[in-house]
Amino acid sequence: MRTKKIKTFYTPKQVCLKDIEKKSFSKSPLKPLLLMEYLKKNGFDQVLEFSDEFPAFNKRDFLLAHTRNYVNDFFEGGRLSETNGLPWSLELVDSVCYTNSSLYHAIRYACDHPETLTFSPTSGFHHATPEAGKGYCTFSGQVIASRKLYQEKGLVGAYLDLDGHYGNSIPNSVSYFPDIEQAIACHINPKFKHREYHNDFKQELTKLTDLIREGKVHYVVWCHGADSHEWDDLGSQCTTEEWIQCSELFYETIRALEAELGRCIPVTITLFGGYRKDDYNSVLSLHATDIQKAAKILLNVDITYETMVQPRIIQNQFLSLSNERTSDQIKRA
Ligand SMILES: [Zn+2]
Image (tube, rainbow, N blue to C red):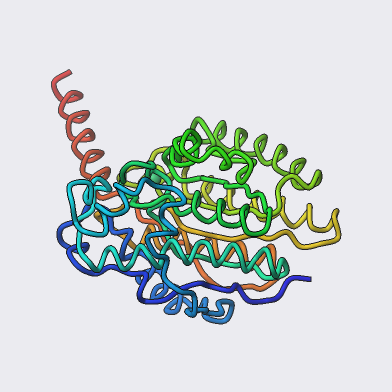
């Protein structure tokens, strides 16, 4: 029987305010704060239990996934410090020490207490490479978390990466840190779009459930990036309905497997990407909906909330432009 609260590994220290609002395309360093405010405003407090007592990661932790050269350079604001595509600041350095730690502690807690669903409101991990940052990602949080859990407890993980972009961090780390292949047994990044995307995810989930049954995967990390939504500035794969269906499919699969096995499976929710210059609340609304589905399906807790994803303004402008052209063409014809 699962506990009725989602244990949320959040501290304001994992947020970077400096230069992000005005100078950065990616708002991800602000996302933990924006999402926590959004969830509180929309009545999710009833299901969230906060934990802010996890310590910051230090340089030694980051060496589990990165070269000494890159880690030192990022901490000191050197040549490689903006390879992540974000404006560098000491505040950003401090915040990533907490985002990466949040993910690790959320997974670790779920492994120690499988009946508790855990949540790390973080992103900015899955494009980082051992030698540099990339694509708004600074350090490979999932590589660090999984190598730590494998080395400390012999635990093996699965990452369901439904961000709109391929999570290269894990495969890019293999030549540097070969034990990552033992530490992470399953790394899902669905291919295609719309119905085919959903079907591909479903097939991959079947393989995951077999690995869990066989005892080859001990914990699951659910990374439902909002940038797989078709109206995201960087996305294309899913409509709102399809995006939500992926959440439902995941949580229902876990629920069914738990009933079959007669035990809870350690599950951690995290955020990953999401970019809407015109309406950032659309990004937050997708993440909130994912939490709503988790609460309903896994914890049997109802949260009254209506998904609010706005059509892209830029797309509307384009549509009205093309409508004008069409009517223009009709007139000429
Ligand atoms: Zn992405």
